[in-house]
Length: 452
Image (cartoon, rainbow, N blue to C red; front, top):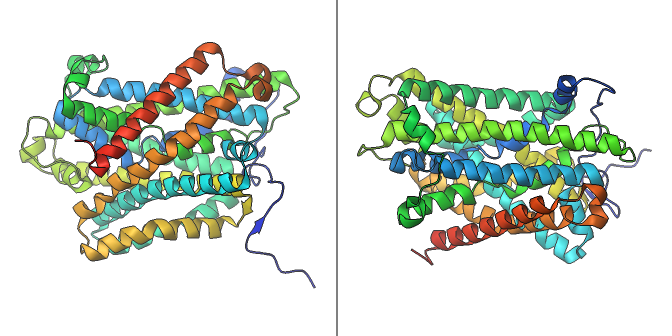
């Protein structure tokens, strides 16, 4: 009689990162630049999703509403930091054949590994909360379905991911890319109709001293930078960079993988930068210089169909397109959050669990506070969206535990060999890390009311 398969198990020696898809995509030999790049294109889009999920939308739009184009420079700087750290994350996975969670666990004790897993799991749950709220509100706006029902619907997306994993990793990349394309096209169209002042917009990418001297502007700038780098994206990047088949004994193959994976990452993060810029510009077009209330997804939806706010471009179509983009953002972020959950669970505590069970556990923990708020506040979107602020606190706490090991590992000559960080990369990474940590600590104090 065949022994009964266990629901979960602890492994003494962890398997390869995302074992079911690790090295599953073959890279053509002696192919041209564009064909090779096409083969490596995909992981970057999964990473970029984390930089334009529903949790980032309100901050970017609020920046445009209050200060027009002035904070576009902050969006640019944040994106450059993201590109630097994600390139390092991908290089770590390609060179070592291990993800960031696995390497961090190797350098620490079992007890510390468990604590790090809890912290990172809370960060993924925090990200999940933003995705649940965004998707549920989008469903309500599109189909007039009660918010609680929308929350339950989006909580069942575990079934979608299980189906996608069966279809293969390239299919997941293609579906996420399609969802991101929807977001990009919707906001490009809406910003085009709003008729932004191009010269003034371009000037916004040059930093202004007002960002430091104006306290309100500084706070929003801190919010944009502090919420840019998602800790789970660094773990994810170090893992999915290994989905392409690679002979690590072949120096040329490793070098090629690093090159094309970095190009892919930078291209996709540039798309994320464009989306966040469009969000800020849209916020300026809709709300700058008006007395309209701002800060909620519903406000934006209503503004796009209210000619008193937007003017001649307002239409029900634009508001519906906004809701479609919001739903696309929530669902694409859900896929990457699930993969990250599996990576940190297996990496930190060597717990092997079926994807459906891992996803169900994480999603149940994430959806519980959202449902509780929805019931208590009778589906009040404004109150439920307040959870987004709390979720950013967890992300801020988890960030140093991902960024610091990443910089240490990729700067370690013994671990990385000839692919160790160059001097300028190492110093730039440490400066970015210190800045991110300081800003996130400041945001935590702000959120808790310790500083005003």
